[in-house]
Image (tube, rainbow, N blue to C red; front, side, top):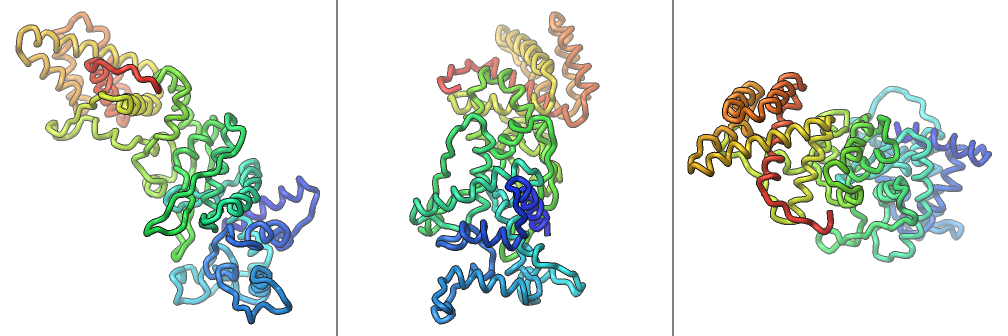
Length: 439
């Protein structure tokens, strides 16, 4: 299991840093057990494990506590049982009746105790995001940061009665996101929320976009491979996913161009809503970059196959202006060419000048031509409509030629984005924008 690989990797680094020679079992006894399981509530959930099962009073021999008895049962299981999901985190079920029995094999695979205890270390280093997805990072500095948060989580649970335990992965997500942020000096624990049907308070999963943003700000020029999975009644493996942080960094590079000031970074991180969940983004591709971060609802304002369904974005509040700029930011980051923003702006000026001639004459011929440009569904239709505009607005001939040249040479996937950018620029210039106080 990959949990074992990460657990052993971390343990090697831990021993090197502290000049120790702990085995995985010794690390479990000295670091995992006292922090995770000695006291209630526990920090980690491993279904059907000794720490998941209640201990009867009669089973607490020689005055041992329930936790000490559970620890003893775990050691006995590792020493005497066939490896299974109750002692080997993420492994197959113990028998064919369990929901994870599909992982059972008749191959005589030799799995030693080190591998099993290391799986507990690896799972404790998992980073949870919303949707119940866990991520394992194969990067020393990130594993070190996650480890630092374990004792803080224990302290938090002891000081916050009524909060559900066994959420170490979820905690790790919030902890890591803040530890990656150089602008935050002190950690602010996530505010727990009440579960459905009045259940106990629980920590909500971190937005996966926020974690990607923090990673891209700390590591702006790399790609980072993570292992994505979830454990439950049925284990789900999403596999290895490549986070293209160098792509996401473009959002910060173009932020000032669109918003004007970098203070909007915090607001964008907090309010960003992606079209896809992390699980769904992984289904589409094993690569998570800018494309996977497409903002929610933005596509509604792209040119639609049926022109009657075309929607025009309305800027009538600070919130609508913020999301309008956010959509533009994502598009220009995808296009990755500042000049296209200037070109779309000038083309929008041309279309507005053309439309104004109709306003003076009380006709709609020119308005319809301009609308045809903005609603073009392919490059050919777009260029044909621009030729009509050029005949009526010769003063903009150079600008329109540049637009045609870009439409002909840009990658096929970029064309709808450029048309959307033109639509947004046209909307912005025709709408008297409010002057927000928060942007």
